Image: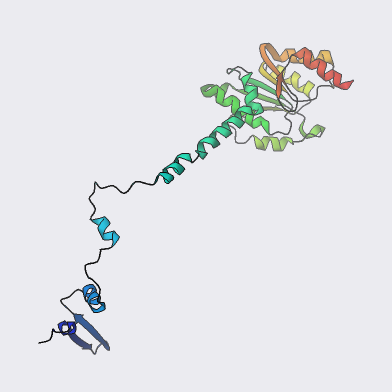
Length: 249
């Protein structure tokens, strides 16, 4: 007797559901559909299982194959971009005029006078730098600014300068006057300074008057600094007076 065909193992049932108007065709078989399909195609049903099934049965302690030496070498040679970037930023900061200036000024300096603000960009940075150095004694900082602003065709208006100081915790005392008149007022209102930063043309002031005004603002340890357009340089009242009076001649 011939071997029964696999189709004889199928039980076919048609169910008509008139209420839905749909005819459902159901096939029940004792043989798994994948095995049946492989049998019909003449394929071996004992082929290897998918990789996903093998991975799921892998023991928990098993390790995957080690990466190739080429990959490890590439990973080892990959530069630390973040570290190099941080070093570059710190290097630039250490070379900035403000950082070079602070190296020559005692950390305890808290009374600072800036005569001439230039383009107005550095004042906020100077105040922030002095505030950080003082730490818990930030309230001791007295930062004073003398500049003529728009009265003598300055690069910054008084209103714009006030606006640029809005975010600072310790805002400066602003004296919108000429250098000579401003130094006189500061000497009477604020007193002597620990640091005096000069970035203004003092050539309109007589030599002896320059020394007199600066000496009213200085104590024996006061640091007097002159900005030459690129960096801050230490100077004295007499040297500063001579340099600026020579500019007139």
